[in-house]
Image 1 (cartoon, rainbow, N blue to C red):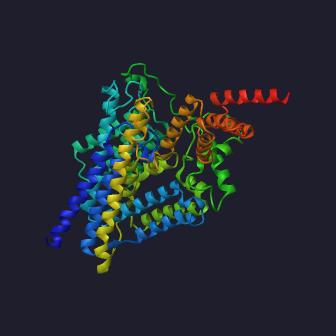
Image 2: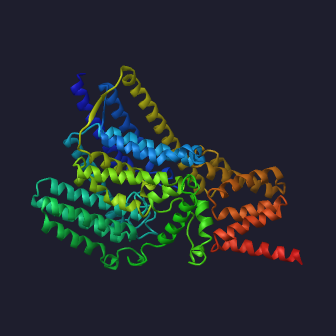
Length: 571
């Protein structure tokens, strides 16, 4: 096949795989165990499609023997180097959470590089159009969820108990900022195209529908970020594209539709409306950030290590007695709800410099006209949301859409690097190996998640169903916990729980306590320590649980019982 025809077909294949990511794979709807990242089942097909997309891109590079490298790409590699440099001297580098972070960063660089190989404006517009259609799917999905689905179904699993539409994402803030991304794309296509009457009307409908859905979703953080992003983007468009009447009208109507009383649209049974956006919409974030800054101040060079946030945060939170934050009920957290701060807490200030460099790259690129502001500013909702939560950890498609925008925004000079014959030959098998590993891992994890759900649906009554789960990094702790539960139950039922079995379970639970101390493990650990005759360790364990979770009734009850026993023994 002539090279010209091959590249035309490879470009079409890339577009097809890109559409597969954002129009099909990210919309895979199935029950999961909750949480973020790979624990969310909709992310697994997204990474499979990512593997296909990157393989096609790598194949094109291998066949051509050329790699397009821009200074913008090199500068972003500098950002990555600063972010990850602390792993060279941080003990968390080889732990599972550290390896996961490295893998995701590698995926981002890989994806960025593949997208940047195609700089034709027509190709960029097609990718943006696919992203736009992806957001429209979510708009339609949320509309159907709220107004038409009242019983649990594959497209709205908890319809009977929820009054909040959330599309595929299962989280209203991520959903809302993704919709606002769609609103910005709608405005982008309006100002960059022919401003026909039909296109203007369609743009108004999209922006106002998304504002309406953000109100229905009762998203506080997401709604604020969405409105600020839309207003900022429209002010930019008013100045550069002279759409004063359209822009000001959209700003006014978007604000109006976002703050309409939800009671006006009450079509769901027993609908409860949460408090409106107000002075308390930041929630407990100010207290969280205060704790985060103290952690940075204590370990500015090394950080606390990747994966150590849950325990470190709880131990610091327990000291905030004067503000009352110590007694504030909240879940065990993995993230400080601010992406730059998260990196600085876990890996130190050097990682923070990576974000400073990233911002400087954007400013420099805009100043030198190397970055297209109409494309780069499409990322406003994502950047804003990352300052207040962790949307990139929640949805792979959301993260890849952000990386796409960063790549497509570049319009400067590109250097074509000719690869050696050996490198050209090796690109395809290496890419094939990477893609195969990703696809295999995701399918195995998908099956394992389904097996774990089947085990839970059976009320954990069949031990053989547990052993059908293929253990991996996502399910390892959950699997081991359930396995030890069966060992303990059998031992208790027979009256013959061995010391060795109890000690093995203690070691497992204590490992969790030192990294991610969930409330449930404190009662179990204290009982196990009592069983093996270590009353002091039982007491120190339940005391720590009481310190970390003073509002937890089960821990409080166990603590008071053990306290009474200790007082009786003292007398």
